[in-house]
Image (cartoon, rainbow, N blue to C red; front, side, top):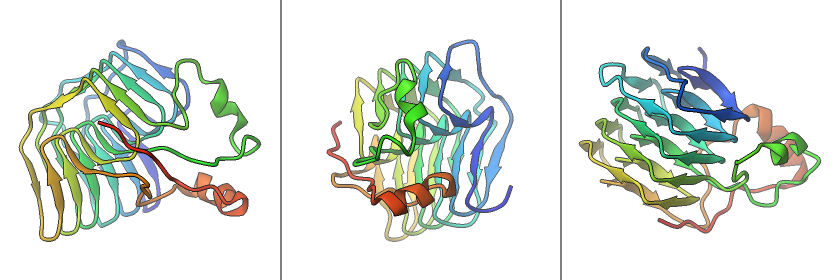
Amino acid sequence: TGPNSIIGGLIGLNAGTIGSTLSSTGKVTGDSESYIGGLVGLNVGRIDGVVQSTPGATVTGLGEFNAIGGLVGGNVGTIVASSAVRNVSAGLYASAGGLAGVNMTFDNVPDPVFPELSLVPGSSFPVGTISNSTASGNVTGGDGSTVGGLVGSNGGAISGSTASGIVTGGAFSLVGGLVGWNSGPFMTPILPAIMSGACDVEGCNVLVTATV
């Protein structure tokens, strides 16, 4: 898969509901400026009760500026009671997390742009929400990265969640056992091409008040 993609071990872009009966076990690899996740590349829907328990199946981001996670690359929906055991390996200037690379909020998104997303049952879109979830895989980021045991960069809400993996980053990185960077306002490092055009026209931003 080439750069600027949305890549998941099971689903690229999830705008529905994924339950406990679904999982992925293979290795996942993506190139620069992409959302890369062990299960889902970018989640705007709901992930509920999913366990990714294949520690040998690493999620790898080649190149630079990736959002990469053991469960999802990016989350702007809901993740609840889910876990990831996968190791995550990212290149330069990445946002890497054991569960999610980035957990974010889209602010000022005009309703006509993505009207179907407001109909997703159980999703907190446009606010990324993670609750009662865990990550235990090791997470490694290259120089200039934000690296967290659970989430690399958080611009949404996290509650009742833990991480236990080994977390390492290269030079000039932000590294945390739970979250590498918890900030608001927060600008996601990448906005997929399928969304960026509409957002540029309508002037929507990726802004948040983050909570952990």
